[in-house]
Image (tube, rainbow, N blue to C red):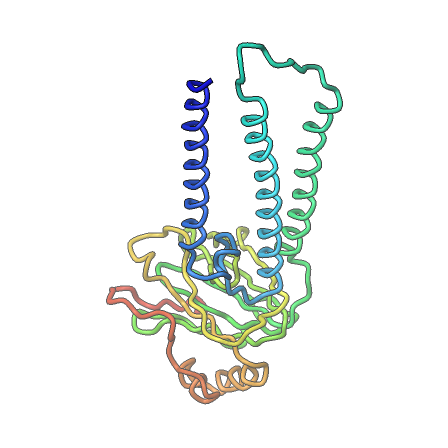
Length: 300
């Protein structure tokens, strides 16, 4: 009896130590997060400025919570089996097989989980990629090695003949795309050379830009919800100066936007128009690099 008792104590001690290590590892994982909000965003980018971005965020959080719930349930079953059916002697435990209710449970449950996730993913994806929505503002985005041109298009017309004003980046000036809050915006994307990618991180969405008349792509955002300056980038490796192919999205009030367009129509440059509406004339989120690239105007 003494020998058996001395064997039980070390095993119990090992289990306590393992449990303590598990708790310590869990706390260490939680404490390495920058803050509570970031920890509970589960790695998803924060700061979305469109309704679509918020819907994608909600979908991600829901999917992660579902995955954690399934994981905790499975881990609980594993540890319950380990402790409940651990070896206590030489006698073989009762063997259970052909348990129909159990087999139905672990077949139907995963199908239900996947079906629910698929349903909500399809809803959000359809909304994000819907190009049939009406838009108050249309901007043609022209990508080229290695810069951007933004053509503000007259509502109800095609970009080929309805361009009101344009902003083109150069080797000296980062192009600034000015848009208002509270209005749906349609982006029409095209490339004049190779594949590029239009990406503003706060949109939580990017779209590849392909060369060729028939390869034009577009997307619509319901509205921009927050004023501010947001960096934009090319997210497709496109050549020597890919890393320098930046722009800035400047979101302003509708009143400022109307004044900006009026200033541009009066012949002001983008920087002069921005100054006239009380905005910083140059990009504040990214800097110009010392390169040899030259601005190209594709309207001519």
